[in-house]
Length: 473
Length: 161
Figure 1 (tube, chains in turn yellow, cyan):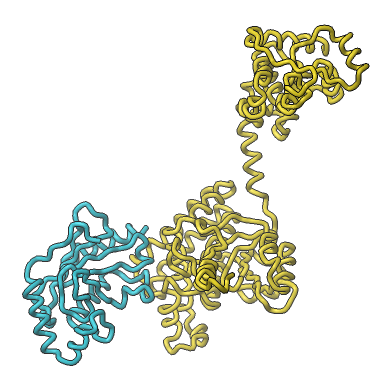
Figure 2: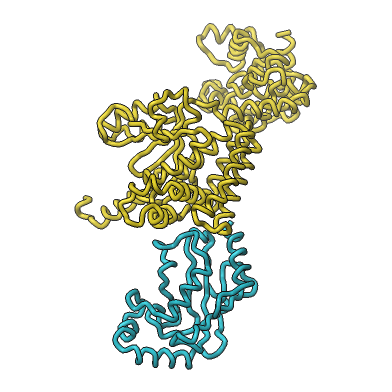
């Protein structure tokens, strides 16, 4: 079929080419378990499969990062023009946040001090780069002012996803790298085949927005930005080279022969032929968990509103009513409680759908002393829920009322004991729609539901509930 | 961010405009559109003319190059001989553009282009050919264009883009 429609095939191929593996709206994505990479390569060739299976054991998490080589941050993603400055920049900020506010402040001062180097050695006019330098440094400061709180990471994430701003950060990093190369022209000139030497390389490669970073550019960036703060860059190469694990290489070079424990903070990058993502080695405390704990303890302050035991009773009932068949056997307090319990009587659909909505948000119920309890167990302190045995006995007693005939004998027995037929007690929609419901036309003792004015005022229902409640007491 | 830099560049050029250039901001428009009047120096064949140019700065300036258009017709190998007035300037091509290039450098390039056309990188092949083969004929036509279109203060379109 594809052969018959080469045009469609070509269109599909073109679409595949433009497919963006990363979330296109995020320049820097969310941190994810690196097992996602394993899954991504599950159907790739054996080398990739083997290396990506080993990857989560080496690096627990990763963060997808979009390339910045293509100067358009929201423009078309061009894999051939991606590079690692965004990854390095983001990870550098991240490591500094972990190092704390004092380190950030001294780093800001160091960067400000480098301005004269950019002018004198780099040859860049101050008025050209001052905005980028200012933005970079003030971003670092702002993020640093929240160091030690989850806010710092959230702010960092937000800042590095602001396209126009990050273009400035990244260009500033380019200028730093170029300045470093120019300052060490003697060392690096031999690397440049071009007769223009390092100055020409900076002019034609590093200073252009749409040029890919090369090894030299990364080396320069590491030396100018990371090395002075004792950071190390480790790049894991995921490629077709033989081996069962990704090849690793560290910058600065001397870090390769040292053990990890003797090194400062390490920024891990995952290199794939068209991509640099950030890797993480240790599972840091998941920020999600931090938020959860925070939100519970925040709400704990609200909880004392429910000091009135009746309020808790209402919660109990509402929550329990969500469990099929429980309304029957529940002790109901003479309060607004009854009303909530009553509702499903009239309309099973209200029970199935409206009930959870009308229930207060479970975490709000949690008493301050038990912030970690689940909503259901949180009710414990104020009112123990009926033990399972009681619940089941409640079900048993409910059975005769519903005139479920298990045998002829039972029918007689029931008839003898329960006396006049009690008001119909159905709580679950499943039951109400079954033939066991006497109001169902398929029931042998079919009797349609009747409206009575008392029902409207829930008297009959409450009467039963009261009787049952007192029985249990 | 780009507006900070733009404001700075505009303030500099406004206070100290390069020779032969007048810069105005169109009313009620942001810094992203500039109206420029250029009067080429006497050594240019286009000399007594006044040429209106619209400089448009993209929102992501300086990471994307500005675009430049002539609003005044000019008989020139590097400017389209139509109402669009597209102009070919090397430093504004996206593959050559650097964020560190300033607008004053762009204006310098415009002045040079008006003094010395670049027939090897033309937008109007026919005019480039004439410029190369028969310079006096080109100069004559260029001056005729100046007399016809470029003697008065240029008028800028209201919604210049």
